[in-house]
Amino acid sequence: MSASKTTYDPNNIFAKILRGEIPCKKVYEDDFVLAFYDIVPISPVHVLVIPKNPYVSFADFTANAKPEEIACFMKAVGKIAKDLGIEEDGYRLVTNIGKNSGQEVPHFHVHILGGRQFGPLG
Ligand code: 5GP
Image (cartoon, rainbow, N blue to C red; front, top):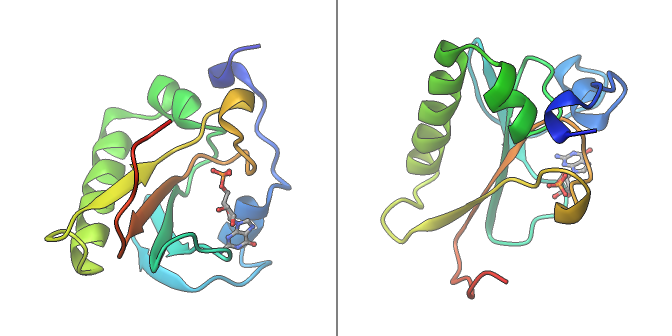
């Protein structure tokens, strides 16, 4: 089954955060988007940006979200990074999709990673 066809699990941890069942350290929120600090940061700045609607992955999101929602999401990622103060020095965006990537939480999310120098991908 392709990542864009995988069934959404409403009991995943980010769904619980969205329902307020689990707390998070919120960074940003609007009609479509929630952003919060990662519980196990791998860099001085490590924020997760998620859509409020239920998409399993980037593949599901880009295949099935409305263009307006995709645009709002992308603009929010840029604004959040800027507001976090990491735009000038630069930052890395990561989104894991499915098994080969090691995606742990099956709700689409983008990692904003900043505050240190990263090595090459690979
Ligand atoms: P993935 O591997 O799916 O791309 O990343 C999932 C991320 O979610 C990991 O970096 C992990 O530390 C983070 N995470 C897992 N559970 C929680 C939680 O309960 N709260 C927060 N804030 N982050 C979480």
